[in-house]
Amino acid sequence: MVQRPRGTRDFGPKEMQRRLAFESLLEEQARRHGFSRIQTPIFESLDLFTAKSGPGVVSQLYAFKDKGERDLTLRPELTAPVMRMVAEELRNETKPLRLSYFGQCFRYEEFKKGRYREFFQYGVELIGATGPLVEAEVIALAINMLSESGLKNWELRIGHVGVLKQALSGIGLSASAESGEPPIASAMRFLDKGDFKGLEALLSGQGISSDYIQPLQQLSALEGGQETIAQAREILSSIEGVSLEALEALETTLTSITHLAPSPPSLSVNLTVARGLDYYTGTVFEVHVPELGGEGQVLGGGSYRLLHLFGLEDLDPCCGFGLGFDRVLLALEAQAAAENRKEVVPGESDTLGLLAVIPFNIDTTSVLGMVGELRNHGERVELELRSRKIGKALNWANNIGAAYAMVIGPRDIEQGKASIKRLSDGEQVETQLNSSSVLEALQQLRS
RNA sequence: GCUGUGGUGGUGUAGGGGUUAGCACGGCAGAUUGUGGUUCUGCCAGCCCGGGUUCAAUUCCCGGCCACGGCCCCA
Image (tube, rainbow, N blue to C red; front, side, top):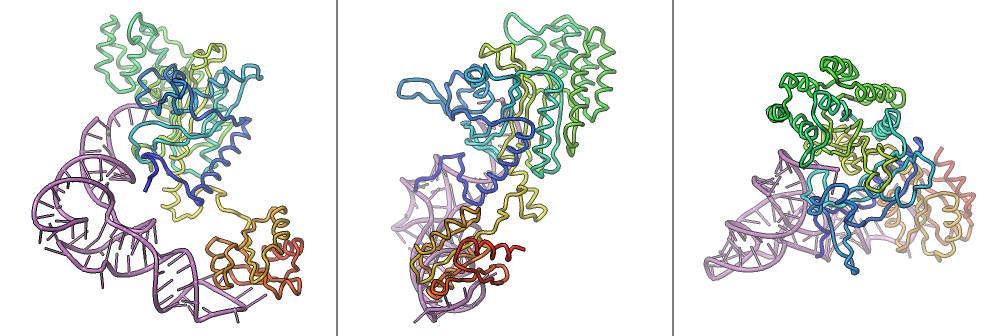
């Protein structure tokens, strides 16, 4: 038998209902924050991603040539396509833009728990405005989304790549190099990995005193709540010539968030949240869920510079985040299972009970009109289509999860009435064979 | 890139060098030609693929594929 390709998944009706509920929950939060949904193609020019991430990414892409020999690839992420779209389609729109998106991405790599070759990402980008308030708006949205999803125990870590950068340039490291990696970038990498020996070698190579190692080490070791800012300020003030601008911006962001969003279960400030990417410029943040183990990051984002790649440097930097749709769902499922809770995503189950209409020994076409009208009134109605006998038909109604069943046989047609049965307890209500009477009967059974 | 465990009907499993490959759930049908979730009966449907060892392999060995984990990486 032909199987589904490695690293992909099928989603059955039950699973899809949950996924749709989760998506609309996220969408609703985005909408409340003024974000509008967009969609970009599932494949793009290969250049789009090599421009952003370098030629090395190709090995992890589903890249191919089309019949016109064009180099294309299934998209591995959504930020670059959105930036492309902004440059191509949205230049004339009033700024700032608040865009949200959801869709599948593809990466050719070994898949793990919560990591598939085809995966789903929900994300937002706020484009055309910069600064602590922009970052606070974006992070507040992230917090609201996770909070509304019912996720527990998640940990938000916030940092600002500018703090360490300003410290490093304050002690005399350069942000540019004639060839190879700029000294500041190298130093950031060493700090990120905790490699202080490497840092020491770098400093001495640049003729900079190793006295600075200790405060830098202290800075990168900082981790905690809002009070971390004060500690960082103290350390930075001890180094001559270091700008406090980034730290103050971070502080403003943090304060603003507390007004805009509920407090997350855990929030920590950590100045080494650098996300390893050189296009991040300001506040960076990520969310982990301990239940997921090694693949525990469910959300990540920050302020970044990418639009200059499309000739729109005046719109840089932007701020956004990507949310790992599959991972959050996995975490929610794990938490629900641990608590023996049935509902995984708030509002995932249908509130309106399904009505099974069972024609019995009659010409089914005679009830179609009523079925159609009930559906027009918003009822969920499923018609028995296999001419089952009564007992089997009711069994069928149970199995499909119907809340109510209505058997309509020759006698009912003759008398123009039938009864609707509430399947949970067998309670029955008489009704005429017309939609308004059925609606009343359903109303009665629901109250 | 490294590495651990495993693959038996649609699902969950038992077994084991020669078996009619067992059980449960499920689906379909009947008992029951107008009211269900119980019960009984029947039917449906399976040893991942390739190679090797053997008189004989679903069972043992090797490889592949697939699944689930742990590291590395992660736009």
